[in-house]
Image (cartoon, one colour):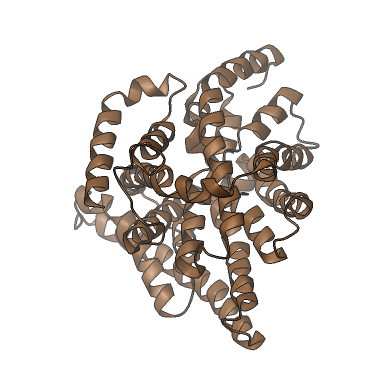
Length: 403
């Protein structure tokens, strides 16, 4: 695995040298890292053979997920979410639940041999979006600002919102497998996970941020350690909640959501450093995805998996978006654009690795293989269409007079 880390470091350094050029092209970082991972792994040159359930893979996945949940949530101003991000609010609290429900309903006839917990787990893991796969969309000046912000806000929050039902499905699968048949045990366990996590995270995020603000006003904390706050607080949230039998990932999300630091310069330093570290780890995870997850899933792919993956990226995403935006007074082009740019990416990958770490790959191969195929298609389809579709949509929005 040391060689894989070296390869990742070289790739990140090399891609960073041309990252500005890549921003203006259809080639994205995830596309490059997934491709290199496939070429270097068992499906290609077979240079590396890391195991899907290895401790290092699981640790990297957990660190990345904790940091991304914290940083993404910290970028959202709760007070302005309903006022300034009305589109995001609709997408998150109408579109996302509808996506989950539709994903389950359409999966049942495709995968009749799977139990309902596996089907729901698959649908829920495929519900969060990842704006990073179509970074050109959220960075393009050709796309109206409110649409760019809405897509970014949706991507930042939906992974945290989707987490509790994912955990519930994991608990259901464990009970079905016979590990714990006591219903009262799982009821108490679920309540602790879903109650302690948010409470601990919210307290740590709010108090920690307020403390940082207080010491910064007095000149006690230099800018270097301000930038390290995102890492420190996210893992305090995770570890403290976990020690109390709460869910550490939910705690990290709520810690970022309630981050108490309000001084603009301090908050910007916290977020900028966290985003940079999260980007580094995210690209490493995409390398692991191509090197380890794609080879493990490939033997299980068939026509049903491919068709459901395509439906997940189109109908299962776009129909709920269209329904959620009824009455928002948006053009058909805008509704189609927002519906299409719901890539499945890093959250789906990390939640899949969490499932492997907690309940194993065996017995869940079918669901995980469909998730992996969907993400693989999304990496390339959304990456390749981000620049040209943004340009086309920008022209349409300009003609329609959308801001």
